[in-house]
Image (cartoon, rainbow, N blue to C red):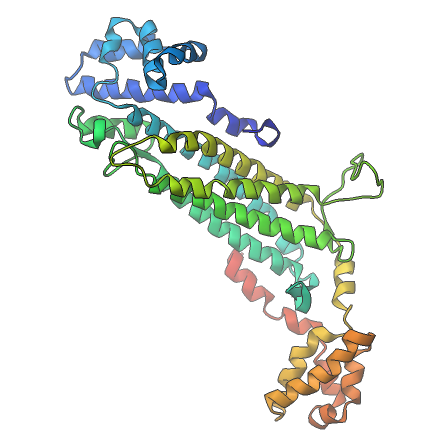
Length: 432
């Protein structure tokens, strides 16, 4: 994790101290279950909780000799627990500890991400209603198409991030699984009730069948979900970047007092936060392919996935956490320029109404191909010379033969394009 893009709350989940604390809880809860089943003495389980402790530096020291992190951890804990420590890890294998711990960490990380998404949704909702009827031009291929509202743009993003929240809830449910099944996952040396007890204590579900590891299709689905959320972040960030371009300037990131945009050009106000979000989204998406490649492990287990997950799990969750919080802040403070939106809306001399004219001609009895030809014939000079579209149509005898001038003028009413905004908002936000 890069400190620059890591919030303290997320960083805490991935510290060695927290990882070993979860390892200890897994082992201690397993001892409780084994004691209740009469497999180990009750006083041994009590001793683990009472005297169990560890030191990160000592674990690292032992691991340099053993070349095995779980053994190093158990050795260090045993130094504190004493002889009763021999009952720890009964019938368990390293993956029982590692995979269950990762499930806890990813679940807690997801809880933070869900809180972040709620911040984004709240900001999008507020700004969408604020600009529900703020007219702006809709663009396809980057070219002016027809009128829309800025609120509708934001409502679309709200709906998208609402779907992402549902996906993330599902991903959390899938990843929050516990496996305490022993070597090759057969429970030969450990009672399945131990797994059930540990799972309950840690708030996890039971893995229905583990080989010796939790199947990595779960993790692949989880990281793929993070990748989709990141893609949505980039889509919104890209929209802001386009709207802030000098030639457009319909909206821009808040520029704080004392902020500097360029080391060379004092006039610059750049969309640096949105550009940063674009980069962070790429980093998060880059974890999806390795996660997919981790699915195909050899037989019941290998560790080709291990080094990958040690990198992508903290990095992807930290980067997405940072990006979502930053996106919420960008949207809360986004500066919107309705007058510029209206200026751009009028920039093409009325061409945005071409479809209404086309449809009116067909309804008046003109064949569609002929109607298209008539409208396009009058539209092209507007592109090329800046002429007025309405004036050209009213001067075209073939057009006015089908449509009276006052009927043509009525087709240029912008309010026509907002007639169903309320319907769309109800679909997105509900009756409220």
